[in-house]
Amino acid sequence: MNSKGFTLIELIVVIMIIGILAATAAPKFINLNADAQTATLQGVKATMKAAAAKVHSKSLVKGNQKLVTGTVNIGDGGGSANDGELAITFGYPVANAGEWQRLMSLDVADFNYRQLAVGDVIAIYRSDVTPPTSLTDPCIVYYVKPASEASVPSFILNACI
Image 1 (cartoon, rainbow, N blue to C red):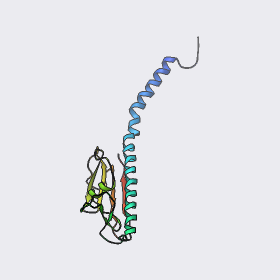
Image 2 (cartoon, rainbow, N blue to C red):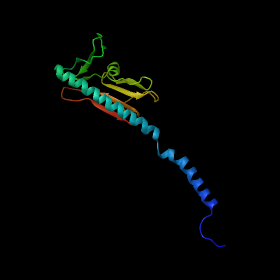
Image 3 (cartoon, rainbow, N blue to C red):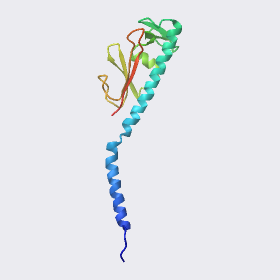
Image 4 (tube, one colour):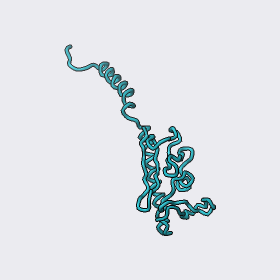
């Protein structure tokens, strides 16, 4: 019998070879773990922006948004005098790990805060990655305080790799 086409065994062998190639090659092209970590940090960045906007609005109401240093009451009972006052610069939060921990209730088992530049930058990073030492390190989101009354803070996300 002279038939054209492939036998069932030949098709199964080809499918198995394609499956093996896909299983070994796909993870090299698709890094879902890094994408998931980056997405989590995008959420942290959005939370940081919202917290800074809330503090800035309180500063505008208080009228101290043009001062280099000042405070606003965020009503958490914390602060240096245990009165809920949060330190600000030009109406936005200072770049201080303790102040940002008060502003954002991130799980300390999952996230850490680190001062990167003296008084200027606070970085938040996942606990399962290497602590950052510079602003170019991957898998961090960081906040740079405003430099003047006419400027706004920066929120930068370095994607995970």
